[in-house]
Amino acid sequence: MEEQQKAQQLEMIRQIRQQQFTQVDGGTLTPPGTPAAQRSEITIPTSYGEARTHVYVPLDARESAPVFINLHGGGFVMGTPEMDDPWCAYVADLSGCIVFNVDYVLAPEHKFPSTVYQCYEVAQWVKNHASEWGGDGSRLAIGGHSAGGNLSAAVCLLNQQKGGELPIAYQILDYPPLDLDTDPANKPDFEEAIPVDIARMFNAMYFENMQDARNPLASPVLASSSELVGLPPALVITAGRDSLAAEAVQYAQMLQKAGVPVVHREYPGEAHGFTHNGTSANAEEAWQLMAEQLKQTFSIA
Image (cartoon, rainbow, N blue to C red):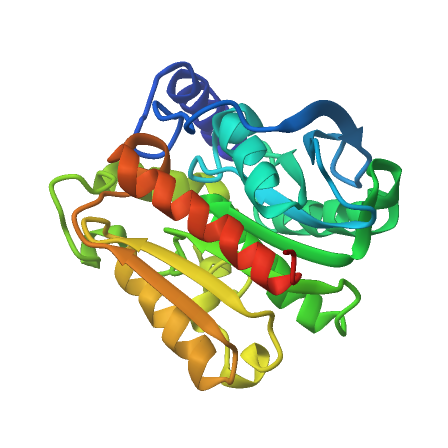
């Protein structure tokens, strides 16, 4: 019965991946102009298979430039780094950071916490190999969009559990789902929100057992205050018409109470995924804000 269920999940996700769910996947917006960054593609070895990764080096990159790891969205079950491709080049150009845009493993083929641990291994590899692109692995930031924001928060929490092995100086959480334990039907409802049945399906595919959703590495809002102390400063971006905004705001407030510096920026009229499919002016502003926070973190003139 279990094997039959897994086969059904795989067939279902195969069909989903063939479609365009613009609320959680894909992108229709592109940055203004042509970003001044050179792009290459590499593979990063991990215990969960090779992680295909795009690297963006600013054309005027300084020696030993800081590094930003970008994690795409897609509900943990779909998405590719190509979704963020033009914007990663844009962030590299504006911030002066070398950007690593990661293609992590997806559910249901890889259940929680596989993706969290793979992303952590990718960050370890980047720390040790950034110098091959002129980067400084001791100056590291991580961030992502939607599911990628969840994974970024989880990597920071996992790093805390491991005693701070990674020198993560900043985290960017762009409209992240941070409470996977609460039934999506019990979250704020908006016409533009991710449909409840889709959200439930994504969660069911991500977890082997829904009790895992109570793990702070899956639902960071369930972390204790002691687990938050000492986490990297954060930029939290929310969309006012997003059912996930309230939990992201809650997490931002939790971080602040734990003494973590937080910049929270809400875009009231926007829906989930707006940095890829929303109002172009707001999307561009949000990406510029990400780049500006990275510049300030690493004191790049």
